[in-house]
Length: 340
Length: 281
Image (tube, rainbow over all chains, first blue to last red; front, top):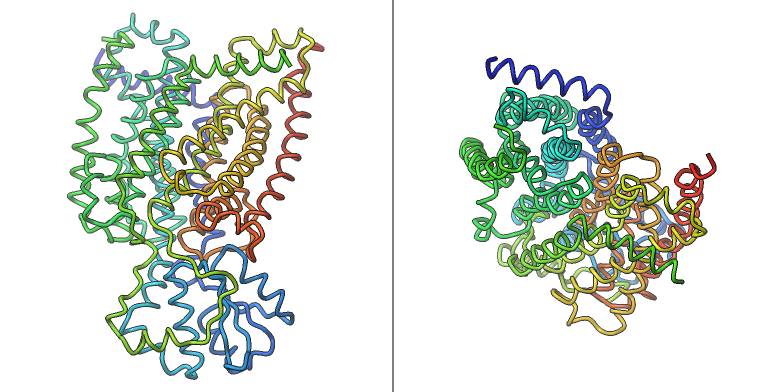
């Protein structure tokens, strides 16, 4: 029996199981549902505008200028306006005082938001003559807008990474199930080898989560999803997913324990690359040993291009580190499952 | 009382058998290591760097002289480390019972513990109370240890009290809610993706935290949104936020208490109807 036949037989068995088990359907649907929810509720580039709470005594001309920067919410009562400003989000209030148009802030706004609001106020007070040139000089406003336009691509990357993670966890759970139910002992007396068994499992999951990833990317990013590069991400992401699956299959003896181990793996898988957003570039080498960081970097270079490592290098490192990390785990797993 | 203690002890033993202690210690070590590894600056690539004042001194002077009034005390920017702890307190510590109460329920089903419990006079109330108390207690313990290893020594006694109260009400809510959700699934296989998806969706308020101008009204109803800002205010301005203009902490207590009550009633009804039902068959 050739390796191909063995893998095919195993794939058919997995497909038969998948039709009975809702978990496979979830894996396929989860990224699509996430994508639809995000697309429905999260604004894309150029769609996100801040909210300004404005007292109705503010002159019409100022209101018109303010409305070119954000959505206005009008208040007749100053105490209600202050209550709106005091909510946890960053919404400034605009009222008329002896000093003319005055801005109310809560005091806990982020630096970026406060600077943006001040520039808006400056522009409105000057009758709309300041902000164009000032924004070009300082980047204060343009960078805020740019940061907001990155929201959707970053959320898309998180959804795609999550799909890889879920796919890997699914394989891990199936491995643990095969071990705890004794199915693996039955397989041990068949001609099946560990590599065929794992290849079938991972190929099935890659195909399944790959479909979900592609659909999710197109829902969230439209034509900029970049299919050829995305297919490469699906394949290389399979190695990171395999790492998660094999780690679960090796460490956990029961699905319950696997969930516990998963609790540890989930934040590691998603938090490590997310850290690259908040730490300075000089600290990024701390993240380099993680294949999931390079997978993130691949996606990041496709949709944002902020990290600057490039798609090719990121793909090479994600694949190499993914393979390298899988080897010792496979050896350990082989000893535990006792397949040939 | 003894029944409660036995139930809690049994629950904890089950968790220890499933690597719970090792996982929690490892998670804590990694979290604390991450906290000390990242620089404590306010640098944020994603948030968009604020343009340097040196670039246009005249503009900076004009911006500084604008008529701006603060309703509260202007606050120093929150550093990376504090931001990490705020997010971890909500999305790691407070989420703990949601996952493990489900994991334990499925283990009990598998072991036949529930079947054995049904023939005892224990009842639904004690079963639910034991679970909620244990997991709320562990949540508080985990939160306290995490804070002590990171920013805890800089907190005032009043901030500690405010934090403990928040961990208590939020822990009760999430334990009851976690149990309620898990009751509708027969195995961890069925629960896994809906449960994890629910967890991931609950993390959407992180987007508002990173982009404070993005706070549509629907996101403000997420319990995690309220918790995120309540934890932020307790850790950064202390219990002054309890009565402050934003009232984020006070509002969160009320919101969490209502949710905890609703989730407890729902979990009690579902436990009685789903979990204890087979006893009558």
